[in-house]
Image (cartoon, rainbow, N blue to C red; front, side, top):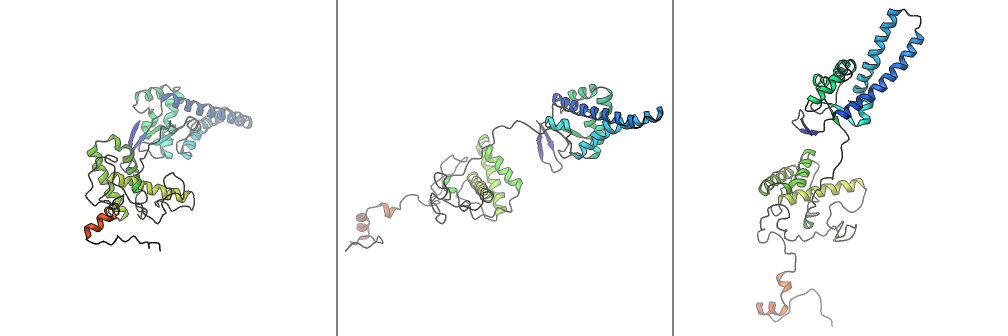
Length: 330
């Protein structure tokens, strides 16, 4: 893995192409180029049989430069670094900063390639690639380019932990349109790697990301929610909105109860009813702080409802039963 730094100071992790894959790509390009060169030469010789030796030699040199040098340069320029051989091997030529190459880069690579590939049968290019830490040949060094792998084995996708159930739908009213993509990427990377971080360091990163996210949404981050859980809930809300836009109208995205309990639409709490959040589970999202008394509503019945009717009447000194809202039967 090679880390490149772009002009915006963004680190890019690219996989430089190895010598066998590069050699196979060059071999494919050369076979195609020589086949085209032979066909064009036969056609031109047949059409210009009346020319003298000097004109025939000049025409041969022109055909050589056009077919074996000019056409590869044009192909790399128009395809942004993907010739036929590189396309078949999953390779691509990019600049040192990770951007697409232009005509001057392809011109330098093609001109130097005549010497280090065609005239020396690739010996100079192989030696330079083996010596270079990133597998660059002499033409890449002079042009400021690098051959990288476009098709890489895909491993298991990074898992973003879901938010606590009591936070699903709580941030449905947030305006997420002003949050930049870079911040979303940073939040996702933190959520996928927070289990690998030191607890105190992870907590500080979560607080900074939560503050940045709250600054772009225009709403302060809740003080009764751990910052990591807040980030997970907002990311879940964004994913729900994107899924709702992608798959058409349906239950309100992010609404509590839209997918209640078993992941089936329409089952659970109606969207207009907000769920009663229970107390957070300690240790679920980094180091937790015990919530202050009254920070969360009680999830069970209140003390007045849980106590028997007789004890309530005795404390108040009244013999009347507590009002229930229902009239007794006649």
